[in-house]
Length: 439
Image 1 (cartoon, rainbow, N blue to C red):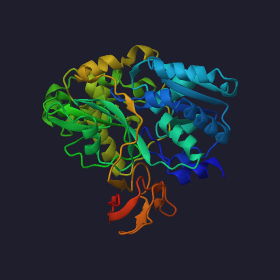
Image 2: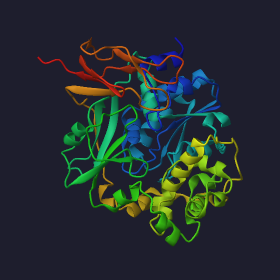
Image 3: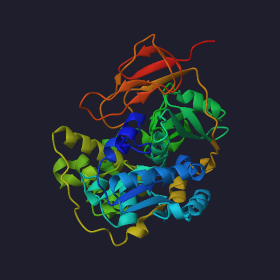
């Protein structure tokens, strides 16, 4: 069976980003295949530990994609300070059978794990606005995705996930959990919080704030951070925009644009113009195409703006408004790469300090024993594409690894499998609930 069919049957999607179905992503011809192990978000520890403990599977997975796509180069990309992972990978890559795989060490800057940053760092090519890495001959897969591909070649389905639980918790850890387990159970496994908190699913910059933990882990969940309720980060992440504040305070210093990683790649992402247009009229925005290259990394909001404004949220608001009117991205690279790009790379430690999270920048050791649970809720939509279609009914007995939801006909999507054995107790538009049978 061809690799894309194996990957499709296993229910694999991008484990580290938007969750694009992997069987579609790899069904192409490419020159480069890149393993993304740079772990974009501060405080998360999944990728570096996956590479340390499952390096052989990462290598096996990237080689399979390299051969399937006909790529000339396969490169594992990670930060140089992931010393344990680097040491393991170097040892394995010295072996004769692995000499077709390369390693590229990145500096500890944010957002080094951004797909387009990695493509440029390794290939020197810029992914155009409205484009994909494949437009410059490249396929990028998260290292956990590559481990899942290696497992799929052994007949295993994606029913588990590694998740870092950190922040104001007693025992920060990276846990191996069944897909569909509640975030509350992960928090309990980390010893609970040390004070009253709100929670961020994902990382501190691009993650979303939630008030409840009655939310299931999906195949893309990488982190759960407990943040004290009075922490200024939570106010910065508040989605409400104070238009009067923007009009009164934004002085058009353009620091947000000067520090924008995507603008530095020549993609014409100019948050200061978005701030100007929101306050004084959309005509002042200029060429809107650059909006579509904003990756919402938040660097303009969390690091560049000296007044505590929210350029990244303004960018997302304007991008949604323009897209809703039918405007689509024009595929282009607007200008040359900034000659001072290297001087604009923000050290992760400085970003963490600016976020006020230094005290939480601690190890989160990997616990490889699979967490047990009596109930899972398998979300029917976990990434890009249409929701999966249930293939079971309430009352059905299901086995672990059994297919419970399939890809909608003629739609982009992924297959879902039971992560525990038990009985289907509820099916909604959003999830399938399975409870372990009582003994």
